[in-house]
Each structure stands twice: as structure tokens, then as C-alpha cells.
Image 1 (cartoon, rainbow, N blue to C red):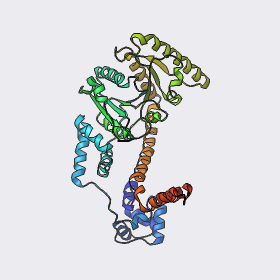
Image 2: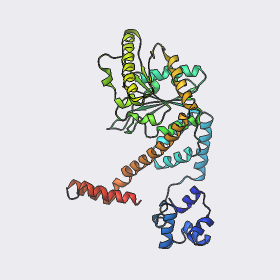
Image 3: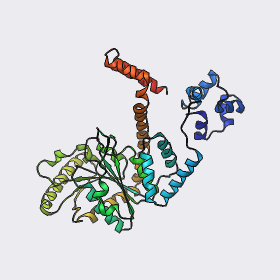
Image 4: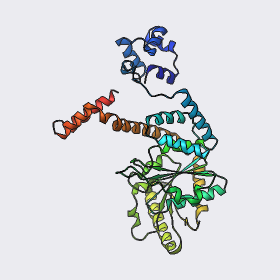
Length: 397
């Protein structure tokens, strides 16, 4: 971060900062403008006063080209933001495409766009997870259409796994939700996971922000399927639903323990025809298991409900549970506290992603890094020493 950016961010005047440095405002302006380099003692003072956010490197690398938006592009992005606020689905899709793009120009545009938005606590974010084949898409369509009948606007972010070989995804959720996808009060966006763990896409949080800016009342986040890292969606939603199949035998072993502990509601889907009786058995066994576990740890007992997405059975009770759950959390302020905590987690996730992208796209191509990698492969440099060298380089950036 350069000094000009720091002063703007912290809303510190040039005169006040110059006074703290014991220099004239004219000298400070010359440092900021790049006409002069500060002396060593001034550089150290600046580094100290900015808590290390502005380092000597930010002055010596002053002339490095930084990608910025021109005035026309800014105007275009502001217009895009206005269209989104008006609920235009076409521009909403365009915005999410920019957000998901890996191009540097689009990433800069996405940052500018997101800064135009404000946090909206009027929506309900619902996370949906379950094993492949449990009927997540059919469940979302059935519940979504019922909510639209109640006058609510519904959006769906559906995450599909990406191929490790080609990087491609099928993105077939729009075809699986035929009725919901053509409804004017609904918006469905399939997104590739792009190798990101946690059952969600890299920019799911940013996409949620776009949907809330477009005033959608209900936002479903459909994960890829149950796995050990599938819990990331929990940090993005207000209520987390786990869908199960009616099954015989020891089904408690067929699901990851961590998912059950995070779930706010467990739903046994496909409770119809020949599977109806088995669904009731599965419901009873999960209720008993959860009751025993929670009684021993004094935790609130979550409910286990059944439904049939095909026959539209059980959805009134499911929605009543969700509505009551959100209403209670808003009354005791847990809803808003959770939203604030999610902002912090989103920030750190964003930092991790940008670090990962820097390592993948920039750091690995540097000559000295390739030399270190070659030394490791030839056993002339240990992994510990190699890691320390590269980490120290990154930490000085």
C-alpha cells in the first residue's frame, strides 16, 4: 500500500501526518507524488506510524505499473451496479461472471463493483448439502416455487465440481430446475468449484452479496455433496440444511460426523412410495441418536423432518421450521452477530485466495523460485530451507 492510499483509507490529512513526521506538508506531498524519496529515518517513521502497511519498498517501487480502471470503465461498473439494484437478472448474471473471472482486469472491476454495494440483512441464506443423488436440486425447486407463491423472490447458487484434468464443469442445475429457472421471480446461477474445497465456489460469498443487492429474499446455496471439507458453506449461510436418503442398516456411518454437528435441520428426502416407511425409520433413528448426543452435551436438539420433493409433501412444516429458526435468532441478536462474524471469515478467505493466486500465477514463474524447486528435486536443498527462503520473500512483499 502506498502512502496516499493509507492516508485516504484512514482519513488522515496531509498536514496532520506531516506534523507527526516532523516535516513540512510540502515535503510530504513530494514524497507522495514521487518527486523525492524520503530519507532513511523518515522511511522508518512512516513504517512505524502506519503499522507496517507502508514500507520502504512502497517508495522505491513507486514507478511500478498498477492496473487501474479508467473513468469510462468506472462509469460502466456503476451503471452495472444500478441495474443490479433494480433487479435486472441479465446484468446480475454479467456481474457474477466478472466476479468469477480470473482475469486481472475483471478482478479489479469486481472489487470496484463490490465496493458499490452495502450489506443487506433482509435476506435469508439457506445452505443445502447432502450426498450426490439425495435430490438437492429437486428439493430446492419444490421449496423455491412454494416460497414464490408466498410472494418471495428466490435465488439459487448451485456449485458443480470441476474436473481436475480439464477444469470444466457440467453446470446442469438449470436443466434440473426447469420450472424454477423460467420463473421471473427466481434466479439460478450454476458455478464451477474450480478446485476450491468446502463444497462451494471461490467467489460464492461475493455472489451472495450481488443477489442481496438485487433484493432477493431467499438465497439457496447448494453444495457439491457431503465430504470432509463440505462445512465451508456453514460460514456463509443463516441456516444449514442436511438432506438424507431413506436407507437401511447403519446409516449413521454413511454421513460425515462434522456435517451433522453443524446442521440446523436434518431432512430425510424421497419419503414417498416404497421408501416412505424406510424414511420414517431413518428419521426416528437420527432423532434418537441426536437426542442422546445432545442431552449429554446440553446442546439444543435439532429436528429431523421428512419430505417428498416429487409429491410436494412436508414443505409447509420445513418452511415453518426455517422461518421460526430465523425469527428466534433475530430476536436474540444471534442472526446479526453471525452475519458480522461471517464478514470477518469472508475477509480472511479472500486473503487466502489472493495469496494462493499470487503463488500460482506469479511466484512459481520467478527464476529464483524455479531454481529452488530444482534444488529440492535434486536433494541439494531441504524442503524446510526452501520453504523458509520463499516464505521470507513473500513476507517482505
